[in-house]
Amino acid sequence: MRTGCKSLGARPDERRGIKLSDARQSDIASQLHSAIGTGAGITPPSESIDCTFDDAYCIRRKLVDLLIADGDRPAGHKIGFTSVTMQKMYGMTGPHFGILMDRMFLEAGMPVPIGHLSDTRAEPELAFELGRSLSGPGVTLADALRAKANDSLADNAGAGYVVFGEAALDPNDLDLASINLSMDVDGILQSAPAGDVMGNPAEPLAWLANKLPELGGLGGALAAGDIVITGAPVKSVAVKPGSQLTSDFGSFGRIDIHFT
Image 1: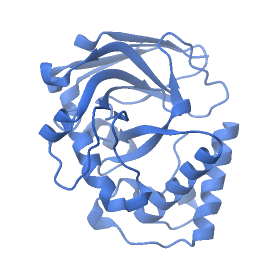
Image 2: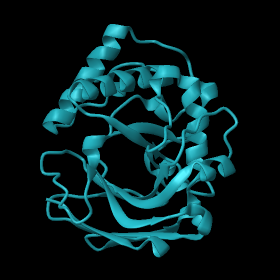
Image 3: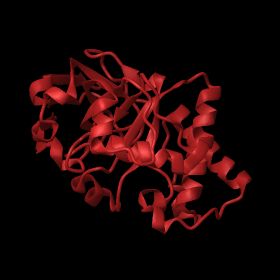
Image 4: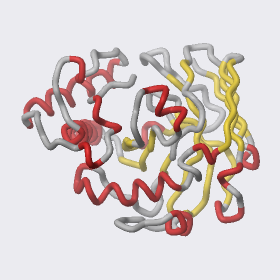
């Protein structure tokens, strides 16, 4: 399910302030929360209201608060639209991010249940586990690499599940940009170098560390132990119950997922 305001991918200079009332933001967050619970798609809010980049972040913060009230715990961040391929696919102008909750993580080898979800898509990504907190402004790629405890595989199954591979390596021992990521979903094969993600798959991590302070309490913070998924270099692919996914991550090995 992909819903939200059209300006989510806007650059900071395109922000136009708050247009929606607090009550209207809360109402949209409640609709999204209900959609997550039922798995039923809803009409994207941007089709009926005029909202801004700031409104979208406020709505997302309220949604996360509702998930926390349900018992979920924030466990990291998901950065999206970090490759030109994904930006063109969805008409975005740059990256944005979401907050990963602990319920989204599944063990490798487990089937991924998606029968109760709508518009589920899968994509292969690299994920980083932070060894220490990371906060901007001024965070660089080198800073981001130094903050990692290890680097592992991830496949985010579109509608909110994350499956890690078994390999965990020090990113400083590898040329991350040259690692080739491939994904085969029901015979649909794609492949691209990890460097198609902002030149290096660790660059989105530095971007997020600098972005979060701009948002205050709306974005959270990057702390030791957090998982950050930094985006896919290939297009996301629709999956359904019965779909089979195989992703190859070069030095990191592969992931096989069966959707039910």
